[in-house]
Length: 532
Image 1 (cartoon, rainbow, N blue to C red):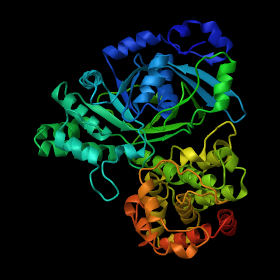
Image 2 (cartoon, rainbow, N blue to C red):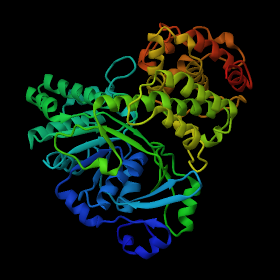
Image 3 (cartoon, rainbow, N blue to C red):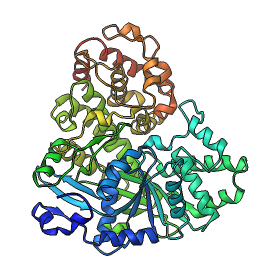
Image 4 (cartoon, rainbow, N blue to C red):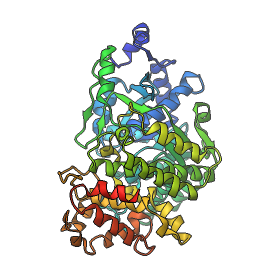
């Protein structure tokens, strides 16, 4: 069996293999979507395909919507060329259950795929056509936290953004410039309202998206590329709802690939793109999933609540996102990632058999996080973290790697630890923290690129990797005195941590832990045992 549109007609073969099919006519949905698009999504990776795509699939299956989603990627065009196009935009979605069983479904809700390549006029023409459609209700994003950054840690505009501002909206390269340019085109054509929705794991994601887009748009107005009415249009007709998303979606796993091959599905081998994206024609992910969105859609929306999405007000979204990202999941993930890499783990589930690491995340979540978390009302923080610690992270059929989670940590620590640090600092209790400074010290120790046995390890990709490692240069394992004041410029950088850790009194504790972590071979394990 092959994953393509024509193969969907062989319903008995797929049924025999235990694979559910779309309960709608995929080509017909694609045709209606092309004629009257309602939903465009930037960020064509795994969480979009396995989660966001499945939401619209449920609506289509129930007859609650008659249009699909058009996917676009702003970063890695190979995804479109090698994963979307060869498989007719279909995805084989595999849910990994804690009991070892799997649920397989072919998703046909994504009916188009584009490359946000400003040098490709055919692609740009299609984007302009979509943004000019009055039917378009929503543009959503899963481009990771760094996708919204238009300035570096020093507060300077990124060279790409600076160039986009200077050259105007005709050929935008940065994702935020691209969106600003498409909104300008929509303003010049149909002037219809639109919801622009970030679904990324970052605090106040809608605000970050709006600020970045509006900064580029305002610069274009100042330079005469657009009139003031363009900004008025964005302010009055374009919403930027906040959201919280949660579904662990690891890299494609070999056992899943082998299982699919065994049941007769062909050509399921993953690829690694030249930009380092791990992706396959299938997505494997855990079953638990949460999506909470501020219900602010000025041009209408699909009935997302009928597919399990929480639609609510901004304050509740903010509380839910804060609960998850700063307390109940993401901080635990980051701590497991950096320490897991140093202790030789390649699976998060195996780390959950490690007594010290379990103590670390329980202290991080229950002892330090829950006392300052705000209950959003729609989801219990205690129940959420219980599910994370007892079911989700230990799931042996969730092949998630600490090396993947450790990617872009510099873009995450301010969000995942910074809010709790601020709460403790505001109460004059920053000195009470142990697990959070231990996690931060662990991250800095990880950046030295050697494990606890003093063997070299590869540090996962990170936009600040070179800069941070340069600041740590000269520090030697086994010689804590070589630390000197090298950590201070990092710890006082509020752009990284959300606040100045020197100013709020945490730097001394972090430096102390760091020196113990570099004391010699086995020092990482020894330090964890000492403080947990």
